[in-house]
Structure formats: structure tokens, C-alpha cells
Image (cartoon, rainbow, N blue to C red; front, side):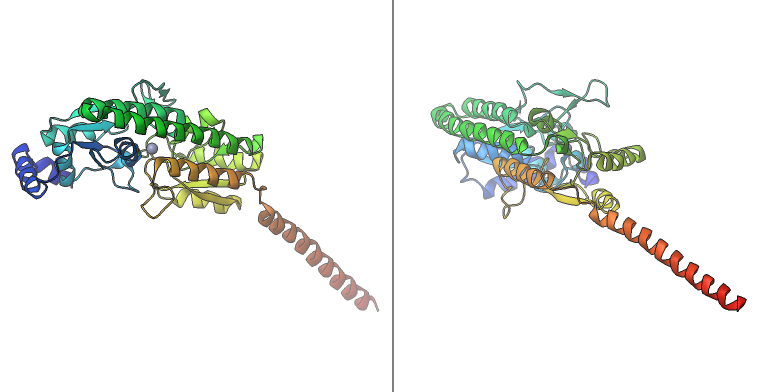
Length: 336
Ligand SMILES: [Zn+2]
């Protein structure tokens, strides 16, 4: 696919766009393209179908490792505005924009949030700002303003929709706070596949222990695995979590080694598919916190491991006792 992208020059893109444009002549609405499904959802809600909303990284795909397709070139070329997260989230985007020949305005919807500095990379920031619901209100306000600039005649409708949505987001923020408050303090530890929950953890008071960093490109360190295994034992963490866009193999390995639970599947870098309750931003955050809350409130279930250890101990002494009896009888009989 990389080869296809490299070989696509701007004139070819324009030909493709012309072809597809003929098929969609009836579509007069402005086109707003989002890089990810989370803010595409916000765009759909705030625009109230007065604009066309679409997004680039498909549901369930990992945006950190995404490789754009020729179809993305067409979308980018046709867009009037492109809503991006920035903060190094879309490393593949600038080449896509250059190759597309688009005239779209690029709107960074994280403008106004306070980024979290990377603890690993110098001068880098954690991109996952939408995971803090109060930040999502800032994202939504930026989207409302971008839509109003794009289509000033519908500013009032956009404003009305934004205000309703803002209220829903404030309710969601309070809901998350309440669920976290129901988890015992020492159990508020979130072990996930990658560091996509730092904003979420910082805002709502969860300690983060991810296997990978803010991007999924680097390999998991052995030292990290050892530290997490020790933490589970020390703090008696009852559950760990897989993520919808990341291979769960390592999380499953940790779960088996420690005889604990997989608490459930969390969504960070993509919404869930259309059949799930996580197919909206609000649904995704609500699902995440419900799964986290119900899993971390459970007792640490190491009983299986403890039982095995106890059984081995009992078998050892019973076997020893029988061997002792056998040799004692043998010795007594020989004496006779
Ligand atoms: Zn991520």
C-alpha cells in the first residue's frame, strides 16, 4: 500500500477525484474529514447532518501504525476542512496531505488543552487528550467554531447542538468521577496494552501501568513485564484490560501467569463498531469506565494459584508420611 501511495502523483489523484465527483454531484454539503472516529462522532452530533462527516482511520485500526490508502487520498482531496488531533498522533498525515493536492483548512482541535509531556521522549507530548472528558468539551467547542467558520449560515444550529452536547459531556464527566469513587483506593490501577489512558488516569485518579508507551511502535520491555507482574502481586490487582486496537496476546499472558481476570476490552484510539454500545464517544467512555469499575471492585482472585500451592504442600507431606510408614513396617518386619 505504501508503494501505491508513493506512486500516486497529484494528477492521478485529480483524475480519481473527478471520477468520484461525477458520482456524487448531488452532494452539495461541505465535507468535513476527521482523522479518527472519535471526533468524527463529535462532528456528526454538532453539525446535525448539515455537513458531510467522514474519517480516515477505520474503526478498530491502530492509528499509530496506520498506512493511508489511495481511497484516503480522494477523501483528503475532497475535504473542505480536516479535523486533526495533532500532538504527534497522526504521523502519517502530512505526506497524505502533500500527495492529495487538497486545499482543505487543517484544524487542530486540541487547541486550548493542556498537553501532557512525554516522560520518555524529549519535547514530545502524549496525544490521547480526548480521554479526559473535560478536554472533549474543548475538542467539541473547536469543532463547533470550525463548522461555524465553514458554514456561517448555520452557526446558530451548530451552537445549539454544541450546547446540548456539552451538557451530555459534563454529565459523562460526573458519571466517571462517581464510578471511580466506588473503586477501593488501592485498586485504582489501570494495566493496559499501551499508554493511551494517561489523561484519563490523571483526571480521574487512576494509576497507569501500560505495557507500551504512547505509541504502539516500540516493543514491550522485559523490565516492564517484570514490574507489572510484581505490582499485581503486591497490590493484589484483580484485573487487567485489553484494548480494541491492539493485539491482546501479552495482556493474556500476564493474566494467565498471575491467575487474575481480563477485566474487558477498552476503547482508546477508536470507537467500537456500529453494533456495539461504544460506537459514539460518550458510549465509548461510559463503556470503559463501567468495565474498569466492575473489574477493579472485584476481590483479587489468586485463589486458584494459592489452592495449587496448598495442594502441592499437602501432597508432599502425605506422600512423605506414607513412605515413612512403609519403611517403618518394612524395618519392623525384618527385625522379626
Ligand atoms: Zn494510542
